[in-house]
Length: 113
Length: 112
Image (tube, rainbow over all chains, first blue to last red; front, side, top):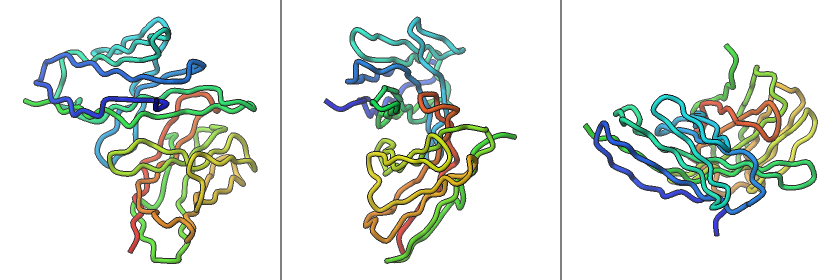
């Protein structure tokens, strides 16, 4: 099983739709979780951290399910500008005082007029 | 404005040539990282540094070298030993090793 896994998509959704992505992780010792947004040929930008109790930022909601080892990102009322690739990142202690942040390969979202 | 600056934006390498990618940050972050991204692929860690004068190999360090002589700077050299260097290279930093990363705008390296 890959360490961090995402459905590559693409997810093609109409404007105004609600869309959700999942990201599964294999390391049960994972401690922190993030969603990044990456536009084509650009750097990833932090969208939001994911907290145990779930958190919301405007139209975006992130949730963590430790029992099933996945995080999710929900986008409500999709805008054309939401079209991008969404990367999840999972941070786990890897021993000797070191942490390893592992990225998924990303899920591509296209919002269609 | 605080941030991470990578240069150049585009770089071309000839066979057998070493090239160096620059990464500078003024965020006062302790940790810095280099990632490689191939088309349709995730980010793979090349090297990281948690503190000045110390760095560790990531998952794909072969054919690359780094230095961390100053807190602000973490240059990456792609050596001639890296046989498939064409990729998008991303530098990142974080306040501490286990915190969220902030990325530079990337360098696209191509082989002539």
